[in-house]
Length: 585
Image: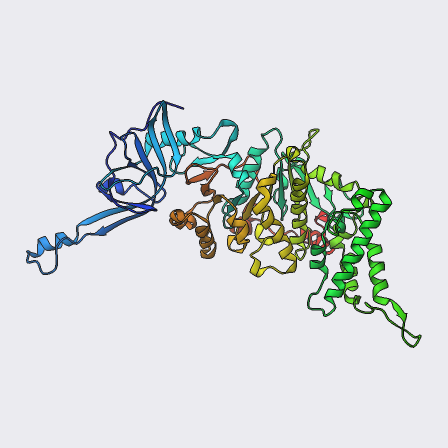
């Protein structure tokens, strides 16, 4: 670290400390011209207890008001009285965020979070700008070891200084990337993935809800491995990048969320028989395949293959069973006619080709050793396998999307949970459009609740097992509060909705809440970054990624003026809609 220290000796005085409370410091300005250069988010240094110590604060309010110096009953000539009433006073409010020391023992230019002490009244205050700002920013960057640095962009206050986050801390303690549509979220995700791809063995899974990250994959000349959940057009001849998630991967709550109508009077009977038969069928699989040890400890939720045909046969047998009655005449059995609607719903789902990824998986997926292969493809980074995986969910029906995404999240977490601690490889789940599958509990139906439960558990416990979340959403007001509350790092781009702003404000420390006032004013690609991954809450300009995601905003007016709607493309789109597959386009 350089021995050149910040020197305010030749800098003009911004003002003096006039008020101190537990969260904020109020300064009375002494240089009116200098105050006009100050804006929200600027940094100010307040003289500390020692000449070598300064408390660093962020400006969250600048006020110029009129100070009344004479009372109304004083008798002065009108000119003097008018001048007294128009006397102005500049007030600046700071949020203290850290302590900078020019010298600390044998070290120079040290910075630490938090204020070691509160400033005293009348202490001198200085605006940090120019060379001093560059030096402070360099000091902050130097505090992050080179191998842990994640360069996000540049500081808005000083475009020559790189905005650096601690990559370890960003992923260790969950992060949230929030911003309105068109604010630059997808570009920021692509940049983070691009930076991670430079590492030897990155391990990230991106849940891509709209297929917009396809340009980042190998197929498009990028750096990530591409997967997509099978659509109706993939069932006959699936390609190597197609993923199937057979029904037996779902636990009983996830299956019942899709199939059970809880308003049905027979719902308890239907759930009970489903559980009984599934457990029996899984036990039979273990016996047939010679896994007797597993057969002594497995549960109904253990991921063990079983035949859907056998399950339907068993349920139909219950539903149509007749037994001898008291008069030697056959009567309906215990479940006679009580499972009819449940069987019908299961058959309807099975016949719907949109759910083929679940009910029409290839025969190989029914093998006992298929699951390690699947998870090896998703988590492995051996033999030149790409460490960043992008899974396209764009053809998954919206009514089961939370369950499907939740199943993958749960499989990753469960695998990490049960693996030997020294064999775990840290993995991060990048949850794009998170509001679609981890909504606020109050608005979640039975299917969405299953997905929310998975990610809430990962948010609360994932750090212990090397699983982290990067939550990406344009509607933080619609994302589970439990998940967001566990995020210790925030990259917040422009947010224009007052409900979304309110959520972000409540997630931040009380002293930082005022900074959210700038969120609607941020430019495209500008972000407010704060949390454990950055030493100082800062406003940055995110670097554009080298490979852009397919999320660019269309130029409506320009295209209307120059481009006609192609009839041939419309016809292809209609066929894709009929086939429920984008492959025909």
